[in-house]
Image 1 (cartoon, rainbow, N blue to C red):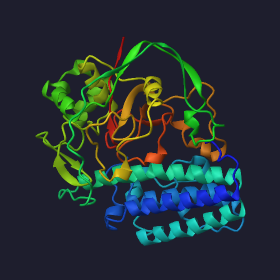
Image 2 (image 1 turned 30 degrees about the vertical axis):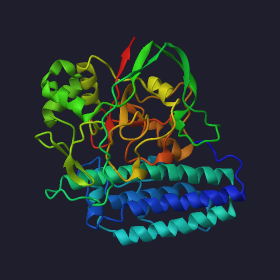
Image 3 (image 1 turned 180 degrees about the vertical axis):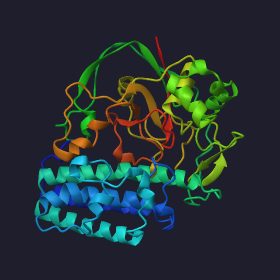
Image 4 (image 1 turned 135 degrees about the vertical axis):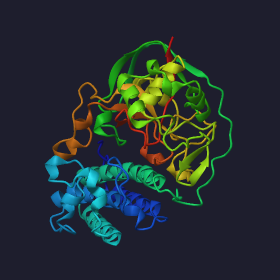
Length: 417
């Protein structure tokens, strides 16, 4: 992470305002949920809403308050075990796949836990507005924004397995009915380019975005927009899920074993999709969503194209502002009509999630945040309709296992020249 440069009391006051806004946003996302909604775990990859609310609070308690606020007393000693995610150096943790069994503490207790930690963070920031404290708090806020997105995608899966298919909110703004733009290409000559971020920059970045480094690219072209639902339907109707030659070996196995025949949340007739606003007609002009890397790769091969590398993606994204369809728009599903490089869907790249040359993880337990996951996963770029707008940037790297589908995952095409 990059430090909050030159922390003064004024800067600390601004950070306190941002802290309250991000923490309040997390609770606001849950306003339409009942307590019963918040405890369900529909599959091992999904965490209950209540667990998300507690875990992001545990993060501040564990990495900001406990080591740096001398008078701080934990709200409940058992929470250190219950709400640790994967930080082995921070202590033991409850089994991920059994988070839905944590009926106690109650949701009300978790909300009280959040208030307890919030008050302590404010006290610490007032007494010690140092660069180190400010940087740790900012990391915690960025972490919470990640979990805001996970909270939405996880509850989407939870509601989808309910036979009644309930809505999370009835007042979500409908996406405008806009035709997809004609497919066009950004042609780019090969050569050496710089990608990534420097940890010393004034803006925030995660350690896995560093260091800025030089890569060699081939002549290529990359599409001006993401692949649409209508284009993906063509792949389905052409027998894309029946042609083994289009698929990587593990992908073909997943198709057979998990009976994939369309993106996650599409109905069997390929006419509707389940969303946080309930089941709705598929917008054929909107970006296709909830497809795995294997599906994205197979589609690209069927189209005679390929997926872009993350350096190709970043080179183009740097030329565009962070604009698009984000969680802030209250649509909460991909929307048609844009050429945005951010929002709508995370876009699979052809790049394995690996360390940049010269990568150094954060010191201590925070070094477990990103580095240890650099194996067997693929990089996605750009954010989604569930991401916070101020959380994204061109250098941002997220990552998922290639069979993941429950996140808002789509694709953009590329080709060699």
